[in-house]
Image (cartoon, rainbow, N blue to C red):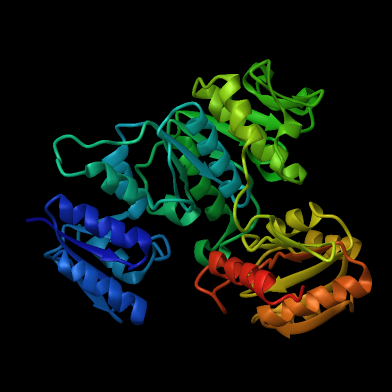
Length: 458
């Protein structure tokens, strides 16, 4: 019986373990953490014959055939380097999913920002066209969950999706060298995750490798870095531009652009752009990329128009929570870096009460600070980055801030200030990771939603 070790007891790690167990592997799973939730998972997996070790770091052993890595585990972890040197097959959870699901076509979406909305919209369009096309990866299912769900009771007759719509992060690409989508999408590129990837060049090359393996490519031509770096690299790529046909890179007959209020793809008007009920120019960019993918997949205009008109948006990305005393409370918890936060802030009506902070990341904050100066009446600072952000605001001459640290105080104080300063919006757009106070950005956004709905007086 072949032996596999899974690192990480998150959703993807559990699905990978269950999938391999069902396929006849001897599976062990480990996680460096230990808490009540993990111990509950440990008991459930033990009942299925999967051995789970908590509070334990992975150490390779010559008896192992495979090591499967969850997305949060660094690919250059010394134990993984040793495992590869020992000849043990080492792969990411996304790669395991690909090995089980490569009989159906994939759309692989990557980029620094814009991935989640674009992925969700692409999945909605494919589903409106009648395809079984679930979103997975960083959104929806873990990729191996799709393989596990399709495995069913009879291993000889798996039931797999028509298309896999996968949001794939740089962490997942790095550990998944065989994933080769039918259609690859690159949304944006700005500095992020440099503490993990080391250099901007390395981060770029990881992203580019997914597109290199994709049969067809959709690229955001309005992103300065992509426009500068990739203009000649893939001559047959589908480029997009919200600025019109004149700004389109590549062959305009293969591109997608806006003309007279319509998204035009491959020379044909497909859908009016005002059918998408999401604010911000960045969402027009997301729309064009989704339309490009749909047309490359042969989906008709009616299905695209239906999906776009009914698309509700994405949780934690400019998600409207409630209107209170005429003030909108908006959850943009997924804005985990300066660029995403700047885009979110630019998309809402001024003046704004901004809630920002968390676990700070490296990056250029210039554009974000300029947008704060132009649109924000007061910044409420939370989390570990609060003091550092306060100093940074003072460095650029902005003293319109308060340090509140916690979410409850931020929301209540935000409501008070919005009334006092006649602000239209209280916006959670942290420009930070969430790990100082929360397990992930979703938990942070859920907490914001809960406080907004439960703690504001009527």
